[in-house]
Amino acid sequence: MLLRPGFNDIKTILFYSGKIILGLSFTMLIPAIVGLLLGEVNPCLDFVIATAIAFICGILLTESCTRHQELRWMHGMVTVAVSWLAAMTLSAVPLFLSGHFKSFLDACFETMSGFTTTGLTLVQNLDHLSRTHNLWRHLGPFIGGQGITIIALSFLIKGGAGAIKLYIGEGRDEKIVPNVINTSRIIWFISIVYLVIGTTILGIIGITIGMKPLNAFFHGTCVFMAGFDTAGFAPQSQNILYYHSLRYEIVTIFFMLIGAFNFNLHYQVWRGNAKEIFKNIEARVFLISIMFTFFLVAIGLHQLGIYPNALMLFRKGCFQLLSGHTTTGYMTIYARQFITDWGNLALVALIIAMANGGSICSTAGGIKMLRLGIAFKALREDIKKMLLPDSAIVIQKFHHIKDIFLTDNQARGVLTITLLYIALYLGGALAGMLYGYPFLESLFESTSAAANVGLSCGITDAAMPVGLKIIYIIQMWAGRLEFVAAFALIGFFVAAIKGK
Image 1 (cartoon, rainbow, N blue to C red):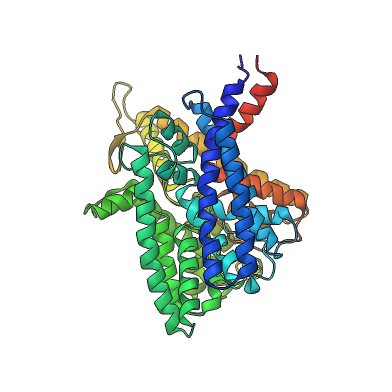
Image 2 (tube, one colour):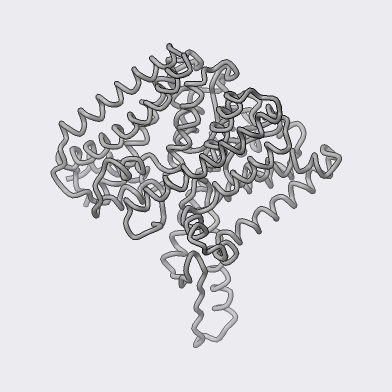
């Protein structure tokens, strides 16, 4: 029997949602301050307005919905789902005020794409967008990649049993240290250190290729934030192709790859346990998956003779493959070239790479390498059970930070999430076909949205149907939260209507 949520349940959810919105409002001050320093008065005012709206909303919720009970699992999951939708809406305000979006829905699409580290974009005339607004586009992935609720957990929400429910609700499967608050702070510390290093390297490369110092470091900051957080936004409409630099592309690849690895793995390496990279099941599966999908891409592109030498294959083929597999979405070709130049084999291989994604507890999306590794281990265990005598005891284990014995519950959980992702990919593809797009193109774009990738074959555009924009927003949101929080929100509404 479903229990109807009580008034105190709603107040608890709104209280914590208000805390998260308050955290978001403070981050909006960053582009406002930058805009003021750069003399971009009107863009700065856009963020002052948006900050005020978000701050007032957060204060109203926290003051009027004072917490009356401990955060339960239902509260945590629904809070995360609601907070992400609220963050999308409030963060779209300054972008819509910029005048570079055809509708408020398009601005919402942009912010959801940013926060979920997807990178699909509907911005108009990007090359003339102010630095202030452009910075916010790239701060979105940096915030969302670490986690919107991570901000609140780090600074605004006290520790306790409730904190873990918010943390897990945001698609985090594991903690770096036992305390969730400290885990959140470690994630931010790692990200900020990488931000300083990445901005410096990309800024220096930008200067060497002829960019003015201020512009070079601004681009370096934006490209790093969207690269490390596997989003794919870029300050210019040509994306990474704009720079026409092999060095820029190689460094970008490096940051895409480290962004797709588990924060726990980063922490282990920082502590001197570099051997974990070679022992970890995720790292091993990631390498195998990259090699397999690139092999198919290389064969497909070679058959067409589209890239005549190894360097071109690396810059146009390998770059896109790694960008897709890390779910970053950076591009060194134009969107329609996937359809006109790549051919079916290479395109299917890229779709597989996007669907697989990166690591759990990282900024990457997709099914995740740990789940693929566990699925293989479970299959291997079942095969052994069939071949060995009935009396034989088969024990399967894998190494992920530590040795872990495989259980039936783990295998079932992996199967469930994997099937849900596949259903999300295919559901979006079916929607695209209903709107008149070819199957392979629809599957490509759907997988890119649901796996939070950001590569596009040309479907994502301001002129695409409104219904498809909404479907892609839902896919990005559900894929980033890995379904649990999204299902909890749906269940909450069902219980509110049919519960007793």
